[in-house]
Image 1 (spheres, rainbow, N blue to C red):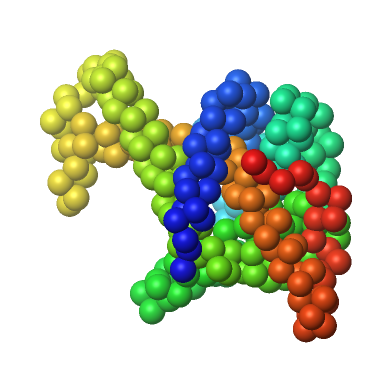
Image 2 (cartoon, one colour):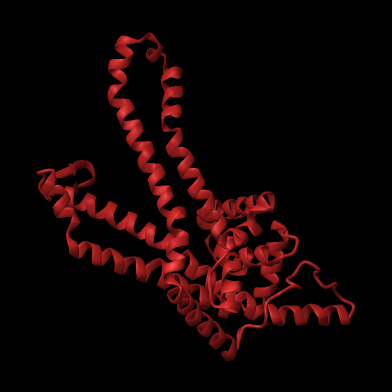
Length: 314
């Protein structure tokens, strides 16, 4: 059970995470632009090219026997959409890498007061691609299991214990996916309540409050009415009778979902900064416990934990 001071430390870290994010808002936005908008651009390119191909396919099939074979048709579809797929996968990979790189950027930002040499920070992750992909594979498996109702409560508990896996992986001299989970569990152990509170606060702000605020502001502009007005479609037109969705309902759903997703992705630095600060906060006590265990002869000090590390977070 966390004591009062531990909870106060979590709240302080939460406030500092927001402060550091908005202090360098332009730099974080610039860094996240391609990982976020690149995925959207890739999807748009895929759908546009696939749509054009679908429209002209009947004419092609009528003129050329080659396009009458389903396998040939599918192969051409893949070839046509390849540029968009490349953009999508490149941006998606950059977004995954950001989960680690931002931690290193944050550490340097706290020391120097600036954000620079981002490629060097990204290389800390990409030079250990196999272990990083393994880390994401384990996380993906846990996420899939968490969908099952029987795993809901265990998933929440494990999510709290494993919340620092990216920080451990980033600052480990020899990054190892399995070790990242073990170390995160041991660091959070004894600080579960404060970590859980920090998780709730960070999630509410970066996943709920700010995205919903943006959605509300966008809705005030009335883009839906402008869009359907240009298409000469009434807001009350029933586009999906089975689901009882009008044109306005459908657009509102798409608008809120897409905008929320974009904002949540753009706020990744806020979350990563917060957890990097919390990692630094817990690191001192964790290393102290490790040294005590070595002194008592009960446990060896983990040689991989941040020996080159950062100064204690005040």
